[in-house]
Structure formats: structure tokens, C-alpha cells
Image (cartoon, rainbow, N blue to C red):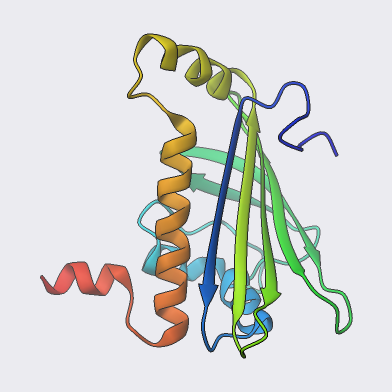
Length: 173
């Protein structure tokens, strides 16, 4: 509630979608819940501080570092019995921003999944980015979020498909 793109106070909204051939929604979810591995395939992530399971659990509070900032986050998982989409989301806060990031994972009807990720931000950081882009057009938080979330999806898909990770590919060159 209060984080839809059309809600008052939302300064930034980013959306991405990608097909994951041969990876079921449950496989995608399990890979996302294993947040300690995010830095293996997503260059903009640091290992979050998680509970003893090392995985994101429903209602869990954890520290998330991204874009050089640290956020206190709270996770929500929607795992309907045999129903889709599967949803994993978190709300995160720091002194500059309040963020809501949601992943919806749908079966694609071909044995794989379609994954969408949406993020909304409000607060001084996103607000200042919103106004600064009028002065410096290159400062576009929305474009940065869309680009990095695309890389996150691409890295996650590569890991699930057994292609190796982006980080390994980069290190090999």
C-alpha cells in the first residue's frame, strides 16, 4: 500500500521483465531467497546481513547494501499453494529514501518463467534526483535502476541456466 507508481509521493518507478527458459518459478524464487549469492551475479549487490538460514524469509528484517547505500529492509513472500505469481518483495529505508522492490515470478507455459521486477522510491534522495535531472539530464535514477535491475535479472538467469555468472565471465577476460 502506498507504493503504486501513481501514488502521491513516489518519485521514482522502475520496471523490468525477462523470460527465464527452463527455470521454474520455484527455482527462480529459491535463487532469489539465497541472497548471500547475489554478489556472485549482480555487481551492484553486497551480501545482505541475514538470519541464521542465510536466506530471505517472510517477515525477516535484514540490512541491504546497493548503490553504495545501506538500507534496513523487511521481506515479504507470497507463496500461494499451486497458484501464481510467486512474489518476493522488500521495503527498505535509510535516511535518504524509502524503497519498495517487488519481484513477481510467473510460469511462461513452456517450462520456464517470466520474472518482473518493480521498484518505487520516495524520500529526499529520489526527490532530489527527480529535480536534479531537470538541471543535469544525465542524472536519471530511473534509468540507473532499470539498467542495474536488467543486469540483476540477466545474471540471475545466467546462473540458473548454468551459463556461469557474469562475475566469472568478467574475471576470465
